[in-house]
Length: 298
Length: 286
Image 1: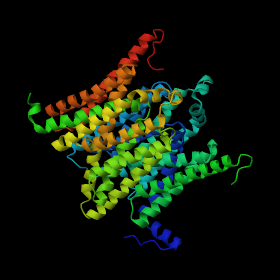
Image 2 (image 1 turned 45 degrees about the vertical axis):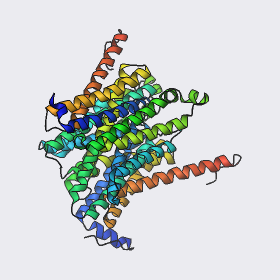
Image 3 (image 1 turned 180 degrees about the horizontal axis):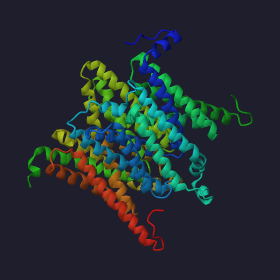
Image 4 (image 1 turned 90 degrees about the horizontal axis):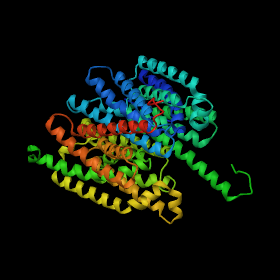
């Protein structure tokens, strides 16, 4: 089926893009990477990876429930992801940054995830054992994306990104220094609820392509890499999106030519970027510490 | 009661008690140290370990334990003083999941044709089935559970000190780093054992729900530790009994439902208690 990788990149790309499903996969990958990158950047900054992961995982029982009830999986993804985001946001104590508050909120997040998965087990059971789509719910399916899927994805991405553009500045302030932001009249709590709902919507939409387990990779990895590279907010947000898009596109191509699952190729590339960034940073730090009198060696 | 006449119920009770005890005790520290994400990550790492073992044709349990303990130690090495940052955990574990997909593809290709079996294995690792385990496995689960509990109780006092005030504990000569690693290995063993006997999902629930409940109900650490362990065992027993009387529903659902209900009651209780303590504040959540 696949023509195989030749070292002639141009013909390779032409081959790959002669298939409409591959073109759609690349389009969807672009939108997914931008959306997940921006939302994930705040998730990493706010140290809410655990919440993000739990919300992502709840999409799986949501999809299972919807399919069992004869609804479209999309309804299940959105219902469960936004629902669990609301539960986590509304029941968490305070801003969730203090030591005690962190302990309580981490327990809450875990209970939400475990209970949602337990519901998922019930629906799988009701459905009569193994769902052939279980694997797709968990690990996604980047192939077989229709034009319509891409349009819906872009629509959701535009809405979420517009909302983020409106609250972005205040959310950044509230994330970096909640106490000062609150004193300045920034509605910290309302912002954190709204942010988690946006995260839920993003995860619900992205999960349709990446699956419940791997959406988390696109949320956390590019953002973490970018925040290792630079501490400047605007620049690292830009890096996040660029890394996300590159990793997704190269991952798709690798999956296509190497006959691998996209979940493996995309996470591997993203993890390699993160490790490289981390290594480069520690090398630079050691060099600087080793020669205290000198300027930084590039 | 006819519950105990069925041998599979007895095995499930034996295994469940051991696992619940270990999860309750380990989970209490996990919640107190705000490290639940580590437990969550390890419960998914178990899945990759199992699939890797399947792909290479090794015993599934070897893969589970090796993956859980190795990744637990890796988390410790990557963090400060044996405590990993959640961004690091997120990155490592997202990639380990990706690796799991790789092993799944490998396994499916080797098996050629029976693509459903790897999917079924995946579902088993995620959801487990406590009713399906043999009596030998149940005894193993009980022994491992009790061993983990004993080691944890042995290090409970210094670990608590290191958890509540790391800097002071370190200054007093408590081996904070070593304790952190020991604790992570205990989590790894618990995760490896529990995820094969009861599934990753129930593992996370049993780690977090009883401990979260205990933390809401009492401020005294050792009382909380006991409450957490007892609640874990209680959840498993009540859940198993319910599943016996309501057939054709997954056992793990009932155990998790009891655990979540108990936790929800504790959340409601602590909110009411806080409101009573501050009579001036009428609005519940602002």
